[in-house]
Image 1 (tube, one colour):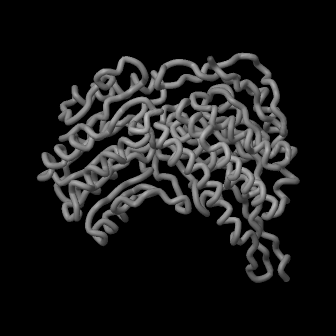
Image 2 (cartoon, rainbow, N blue to C red):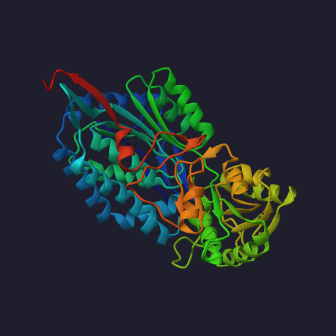
Length: 476
């Protein structure tokens, strides 16, 4: 039995779409539909953008207290419907329930909570001589979000945009749209004025392209593939829109020879790569180890991979659920096969489903050793639980290999603290995790090179939704 989520949230109401076409939402663990959504068109985007434009003058002039009250209600709603939200995320993209309840749900709540802290003390006005510098809402925002961390990627855009006084048109991924629908229901009960937040489901070529090009939309924020990000930027260029993008990654995890616990660093790197079934843009997918310790690293990684239990997302013991779709399943398996063909040493896993599984988009946790950085598996973003271990000669070689990629989203370095920090400064990425440091909602998230532009999270992410106005003579 499937549940229909076939309306859009536009101008404060749940409305029927312009087009009656629908799409099945597939549970990747069962390969069966559990819900349907309507597929939007440019006509639906136009209605949403016009509603957002009409709501902008009043919401952009709202007080910080009014914005905080709404955000507080959204947090309350997320907590009250937390189990429902976690279940929706697990069903739509395959995250194990343990991960859905903690990281997937928790990150969404975390971004709304963090923005409340920023609003407490943010200086919206500054005096310079006789000039008053004012920060104000950037305008109507179009958001195009992915399926891998569905609530997280929506929250880290919606929370700062609302806090800045912007209005919103959101297109979540059509692959994982139910969590966004629940969030829209929560927002509808938050006291937010009609038109400030609007939800239109659909695919990239129809709804995403219409958002990117719409003349009433001032800011476009996109998270997804580098290929799609390029198309978003092209469509937005005609309107001279502000565009922020969080795109692909192929992050290096450098394990230095002076790391206090080599085994812990290697096994932690395996776990980090496999988290969320490898479906994270900042995953440490290239592990760099001293060449002399390659055999040692492979044995540690083999043991760690053996503990990465793959199974039913509803099972509390499951660590890895399925990948999100048949398309991803086929792509990942093809790249694993490519790694074998190009001569990488298969340490664990391999192509095909884990033993005993004949249904669901489950991937074997896979480790390759003795990988060279020119191999396909070291160049392409696989977006699955596939780790490449690469040997390096010395520090300079490690930095060279780490930076030898078209991406620059994240990096990881483990070693003696001062040594690790010295190496971290040489990595050309927007983020570097030192000695196993986890995520920080107050720290900017984003990358260099083809990993995108602009930042999300923290004060820097908030400021992406602000414009700067100079009021000359206002302070005379």
